[in-house]
Length: 422
Image (cartoon, rainbow, N blue to C red; front, side, top):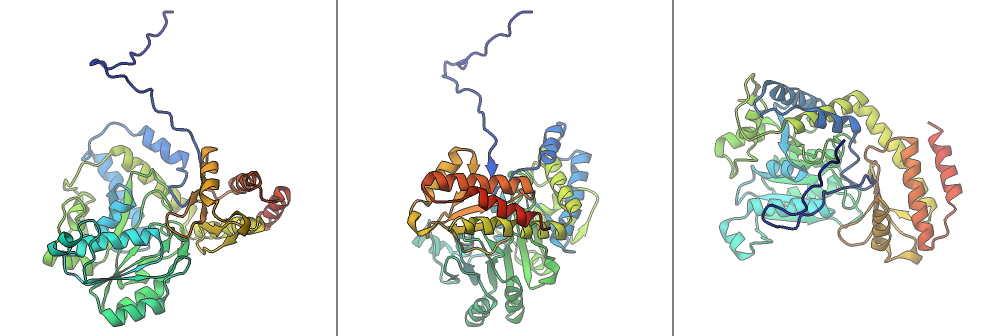
């Protein structure tokens, strides 16, 4: 048998070629993306080569659309996926905002802060952009900053909407920058009281918390992502849902986008004039691989059960939280999929150093991306006794290596006593 020829390490033009890229498997234990289920990856790899209008690809999109409505808990016809990450879904959600529109945005962490930035870009006039092209501050957008580590409450929303009387209001449902759950009922009620159209970033809550968006009718727009609660491949589809009020507004005045236009995008998902239709209208080139993996991720979520999955997150987060606190850390978050905390006082200032060390060892945790410096450990798709033990054990090792006095055996014994109580 003849030896296989070696690949030429230079291009035909003599460019020195890089070796093939190898990306190792890591334990994704941060705020997201989470570890993708192998069954989702298998559907991605098993998909045949097919164009974006092939019958099975379109059928997959129709079925995914129906499953998304179940996941959101809605009858909104305009519920579909936007190609890309959560930022693509949010950009689509913000696209109905036009220059000069009045908006109140509530910010209590890194990601709601970026949402606010996007809103200011959308609502800016040409004069606003010219005054500060990379960070416009239009007077028609009011940013309400809530301190890091605190939640946006209904009282805060009510007071701001009563004072400013905007056309739109924005809030993140769960803010992963600080690990805080914000008051969605209070937000909805205040929007209803003041006839404001609400927009909610549900990137960190959809598929993790148990809620139905139709219970919050004053929220006209919801946007999420594929890599957290849905647990599809990161670059598949960002779920969005628009109610009739915002769709009617778009029909009256339009918006300044093609790619992220809610009505035009929906036509490729076989949605037209507020109804499901048989034939897709071309909007952009969809990937059969992405459709197959997104479809499987939604199937797995619904097979698990939305309510059961939410209960699982609450249970395992409580065990992780107790273990982190037993190591002397102070937890400041209240999200069921993410624990955000301060290190013991003696190790203050070493947060990033600890995170870098963990990540270099394949244990992918995160520090906060804005001040104050904290550590974030998440459990996306880690809802088993074995994975929670792995996360706690690795973090205990990192604390010990840093010099903390941690009784790893006792911490794990206490954790497993709790986990066995279910």
